[in-house]
View (cartoon, rainbow, N blue to C red):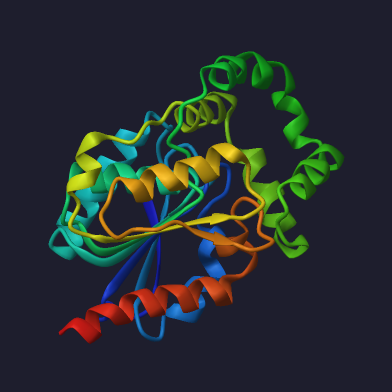
Length: 252
């Protein structure tokens, strides 16, 4: 797995895991805002543009990042955030290692498997995959994702670089992931966010994630669709990270 890093090494470390089909630029603006006070690490998830290996599973990605944090950060960082597929990998990391971080920010992560959607992914993308490289089709798809226009070139460039096999693999993993029982043992203070305009499955998932932990309530962002918090409002996202991390300073 490859990584992009912002900020000085001696600062406390934050790790942010991008959404499926995106790449490290998901958090580029937020990382630039946070780098004065934190060391920000942006992994490029397997099977995505700029990665060094194909996508296998959410569990494997979680284990890879845990190994990286063991090697470079003594097995613990201040905060880990994740959007959608990245949020699922974060949940898996917390399930595999209860003390990997002090704080976790889970955004728009699905934990209710959909057998029907999962079964349709292979046939759907096998037939339509080549349309991804059609700029007009990609523009239509991009608009449906509610991302700000200035990110289109990043989106188009990187979606063209994702192989059919990887696209199907991480989409199937995304639609079949289920929260592990061991997640409830995490020692991290977990914050769960979802857009108020997201689909029912994501909002229900936010309730299930928060309901697995004591004193955790999902936070629904007014007017936001899937992923808009970190992608379209990096200033608000960075402010939320700062506010969450300040709790460690207050508790000392």
